[in-house]
Amino acid sequence: MTTPAPKAGRREWIGLTVLMLPLLLVSMDVSVLYFAVPFISEELRPTATQQLWIFDTYGFVLAGLLITMGALGDRIGRRRLLLLGATAFGAASLLAAYADSAATLIAARAVLGIGGATLMPSTLALVRNMFHDAKQRGTAIGIWTATLTGGIAIGPVLSGILLEHFWWGSIFLINIPAMLLLLLVPFLVPEFRSPATGRFDLLSAALSLGALLPVIYGIKEMARDGVSAPRVLVIVAGLLVGALFLHRQRTRAYPMVDLALFRRRGFAGSLAVNVLAMFAIVGFAIFTTQHLQLVLGLSPLRAALWSLVPSLAVGGVAPAAAALAQRVERAYLIGAGFAIAVLGFAVLTQVTPDSALWVLLVGASIYAGGLVLVMSLVTELVLGAAPPEQAGVASALTESSSELGGALGMALLGSVGAAVYRREVLDGLPAGLPEDARDAARETLGGALAVADGLPADLGDAVLHAARVAFTDGLHLAAIAAMLAMLLGAVAALTALRGVRPADMIDSVS
Image (cartoon, rainbow, N blue to C red; front, top):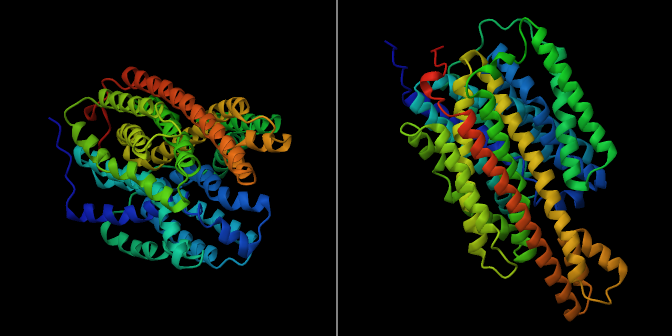
């Protein structure tokens, strides 16, 4: 007879609340710079290249170091790594807030990425160790997922509000009080480290960074500027380094990533399903954002506030999914989540330049709800399939798959939308438009708006109409592509995850 897993009490739930603070801030830092760029540009005078790196350094460093930090937490202790990461994150936030040059801000963003890479897998791994009861753990992971996705949505709004009243550095100073609250962690969260992990493998750490960073960098660059031979070569180089990393893991007595994890039921399938969910939710975000600002003409702050509606609408989905998972097989729930997302994207295929705002928000809320359901359940499956001593690596692999899925979504769905826009807009532009204006309008919707501003009213209105119709056509095809990906996700869930239940998962008490 199996002994029931012990249940978490008040201390663990309070500890979870404290752990959610750094997670919220780490996810917010992905998007908090959106409104600050004009202020930073005016004061620090970055070059175009420096401005890109101010944006991108944080995400690239975070993505590249997730696996390394997850493995390091398993070895030195997840609570210790969390506190070290919080210290680095707080110090880097202070440096970023008072940066007096673009180079200093880029360096601070890099250190923020290092801190973020320690905080994300540490918080999730500690959740795994604090909540041994499957039902409670599912609820806790649902809260973790909702906090992560909510932080990304809140970032631009909070940034806009702070910039209304304070200088641009204030968007970084808000991190420091929350990091100070982590001083409570030793009193609320137990330490955990793997009992037998061998020496930390620095070469494997370097190989994991050399694999993930080029692949994600190359995909994101293609999403921004199109396919080119150098970008393809960067991705290929990353894949080759990844092959070396996997070979080393197979031959080490104490590997950084135990490849036996991928033979556990539910583990590899859950990661693949997570990639597809993030592919859609991140890849389509650019379309909803641009539709709000450039088609409906909302100001950046108003657009950011309206973009919170889907996040608020689905705020209870992740905990509700955990409750449903006690009665319904997870594979069916995940398949249903993908089906809900299909419905949401189908609504978005009906959006036109003249549609009311609520049509876009309803479609976005439906697909976000379905995908948050998917993400919370697959995260639970990944952690449940990994033994407690490997929870840090399992958490890092989950987040790495999220980064990869998001990058692929931006690249592929963005390319689909851009291709349709460039083809359709030329047919709708008015005759007699100067060639340089046609070229600028053809590149992006933002370029078309800039062209229209410099034209007589009738001609400008014609350019705006053509560009907005072309953009919406691109949105429709991207939504259809996302629907196909969601159908693939549903099939993958029903084939790879059917029959995976908490009883099949490792749930030993550490």
